[in-house]
Image 1: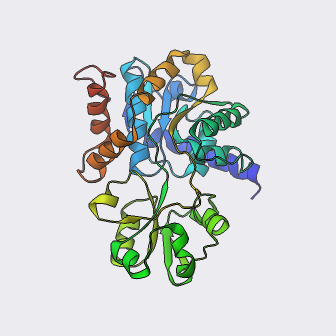
Image 2: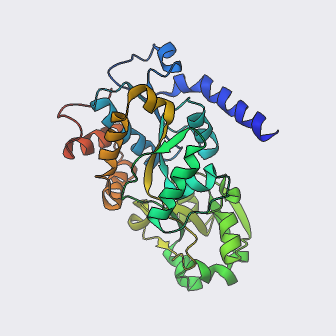
Length: 319
């Protein structure tokens, strides 16, 4: 299928399922009012298909709802290949993104992000401009890909850095999200920057329970997780040092469809910026722990945090 046809098919599919997968609503538009949603009267805040992304969508979405914007959070839509086209075509209005990965994807690989936070975010803003999108203020919070092994595997092969995998990778199985082989900061990047070729690749989930289970049982030896994943410390996993700086700056950055700003005004950006101004890597890691280890609902965790930050009135929560 040609890229244009594929994009069209994705958008048609998402247009059909978005109304059905809405998880929470603001106070201005009832769930039944899909006609208003289709005409942009509702701000849909979308997420990727992993817990932290769902949590971030709830945080930014609830902050907007608390500021009296009509909001619906649409969680777990899938990988970037599904979510970004929906954002570009106005099926979504806001997506909390990761700056480096977003730049690589939006620019079709023509602009390479680096570990330089300011440079990466400037480049992202430029790439978005041609797509009808804009970047709100980046948060201090970052969450890059992490290449992880168990403590036993690290000890057995004397692994401290990703470069240490060079001599043993052909004997090891790598696990990660299904899109990993095509991603510049997953398998494709590991091959380019480190020359790593693993025995095989097992498609699992995006840093979720399948990947953790496969790693702990030895079904895979090396995994891609996310740096803020609380399971890394809880399970005493070893993050291999990125000694060749493959992973770029990945500041949490809300990406917004320009039509939403035109419709609702720049106050929309002001609210998003206020959230980003308070979100740090440590606070995000702690919030992730409440969801992934404590079993709390992202919606409730998000609301509690917003209230402690003075961004939501006491008792306020999206239903």
